[in-house]
Picture 1 (cartoon, rainbow, N blue to C red):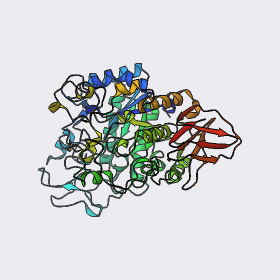
Picture 2: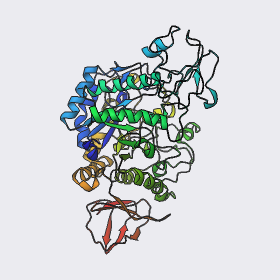
Picture 3: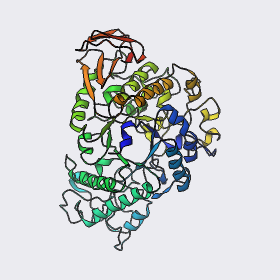
Picture 4: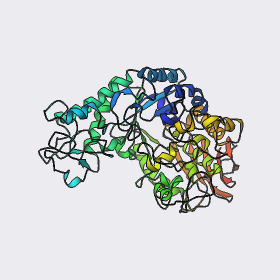
Length: 535
């Protein structure tokens, strides 16, 4: 396990929207370099950079055309290596986004795979053996009629993303390769070669896109896919022991056993994470697009939906809905790796869509004082809003969470000097759009609250990633929620009324940090409305 992960707090950067250094309207590597001191001062000491490799950008870079070449719009390979070096000088580690399950249809591997003549790439992707044959009972999407080769090829997502061949768990037809076949192994080795290429140049590891989806026809335990990642982890342990792997899997019980160091809890039906801040009656993307009134340009026009999120004041949320699921995962995996709680990501509606500034403070204080390695999505630290934007590069409803970072009141809120019509995406047009420069000057701002919590986390060994969680008070439908980590006791009350509880101890403690106020005297904890405290 890389030792630096115990004190890591990640900052996720969507590179095209973070900082534009050359005035072309698109963020770039040099822009990121220019803001590294801001990231360090925030309290983040690790980066996850969304895909930055050469791509036609039909899916915002998740359709890779060349894994060993950066996208021209972000800069050169040397620029990315400079970013690694500059980050390391500041004690910041950098993970790149690896997309191992598919490539762009423009990738040279795929072009050669389409050829009629057999070559070393013929089975780099999953092809059937007849021009009108589908994918069988599994129902994987496929495309035919696009190549001289007489077969159809499987897709992972969009039409432009042919699936790489890691084999099938049960190769029950002649055109299927087993997951231990030479062709499937060749794909694994090719992806390991890509990882070595970037780690040899200073990359500190990878966030792995859709990590659970490699082997087709896999079972519920992801037996075939897990074997792939255990092989990759063995390479890391032997050759790059200080480099890290975090999976987009949202099932730590499987992913950490498969060799990942960390796994996100994501906003999915099987994950308890959504009950914290996105417990919408329906998926937010459908809510937004079904309401023609919602423009995202102001706060007065919002869709109607039910929200029972725990951190939404008086919304009927219950921390047990999250903790019951979380604790099962935590207890079963705490010796294997870390569960990562996130503020948001590029696929998720921003928290400010439904939470007030005070509610956001409570939520961030919670995830930043829990075990595991937390992730903050760029702009969430200032309460950047979700915008209802026209789809861009396959983003659809997700596009609204990918708008440019808001630095100051200058042109384009400090993101770029380009003309507005040249921007990758429009900035928030609201007159009160939150910006970094003003929040830095306000000691009570969301940004400074997060900085304060992270300062405490980094200074206190009890509040780092290691597993030391103890629940002191948690009951269905009741507040506050109280938990201990080592010698620190945290408590949260998101409601509009004062709440109190007996902690089962005789402690009387002083307040170390507070959003709102509270007391702990003779084992009784009392919290003001909408409060979070550390004793």
